[in-house]
Image (cartoon, rainbow over all chains, first blue to last red; front, side, top):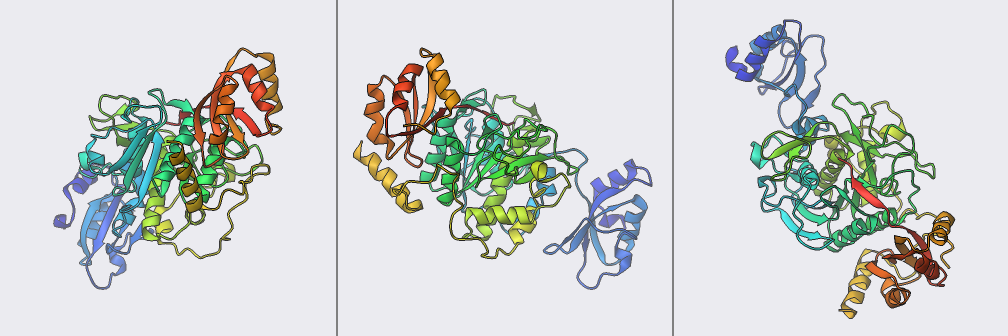
Length: 416
Length: 86
């Protein structure tokens, strides 16, 4: 029997009382599985399709009983008891998506933030381009941008894969718009968005914002909506000024972006997570991802957050939730390359888990990335873009993604 | 005539004419066409945005008052600070 149990599981069984439950993963052999191979009276947390098994919470005696069943091939200890990046990935089931061979390969992600530590092992070979909107290098003087990029697309190389980002094979485009204190101006971020659109990225992450309240008519929100209209998924933070109502600023209030709130490990909306409605009474955020005690890449020499070791640090905030949405969008787009941004937003919202906090705290709920990636997207959305707020209609000179990009770059060439 | 500019902003520009401000200016058409006109008013164009027909402009408040009276100015708004949410 003990041959079926991993050493870490045996240690855990010896460390707890007989009444304590331990999270386990059970692998079954081929062939029929009888009830003796289940935890009596309990429901599994997950059934795995590609891996013939299930995740249970079981007492030591129940684990021993399972191990005695001939249908059971192996039993592992499931999650560690602390909250790590790997826990956040597990909570949203992003890790299960990887088992489908979907890791963000071929998808281009832009992170507009404080820059990046380009020498971090978790980004090796995948930073396709970078820019400092204020001039100079896009090296991270803060540490915030490196952490955010790691949450979205870190490979986990420096941790043996433990602290892997949501889309660990995506390409990264880095726009440094914020300084060492994490501060900048709307216009710098707008320039970063235009740069990212010109790079033809698929997804933009904005773990930043102004103070609320706001109504989406500001220039930064308008720029985000324009990027979405041009075919780019834009994920923005709900901000950390919650739980005050209408605490979300720009660009979180933009109409067409995916505004991301932060949830806890036990599926509660975190107090600090920005709340809706917007100043013009629209519900926001759109969705929640885990945002507490998230471990991700640490910029060399920087001590932002709570450093774990030389390569990783732990941070909390809607900044940490937002890049999970970025990575999730990348996984969805790899699986469904033809989806428009509004469809990516719709499938994330439709498959989210209701955590009972109301639309102006949770949006549609806490994301279920596995369900979103697997979900069949029906062409129910109108082909017409959502109208911009009154008084901000695009001029007649604009004619869609290709035409606008061509006109922008043709004009620039005239003036060189 | 900048009639979509927040009246409170216009009032602040009038009350503190010497204050250095940073605004985002939406114009009617390609912003590059208006760069010289903006500079002629004594203002500095930091950036132009082709996607949204806007410019990031800095300068003295009283110079922005003059800019706001131009027929091709659709709106002026503060270039607000942003910060990271981590």
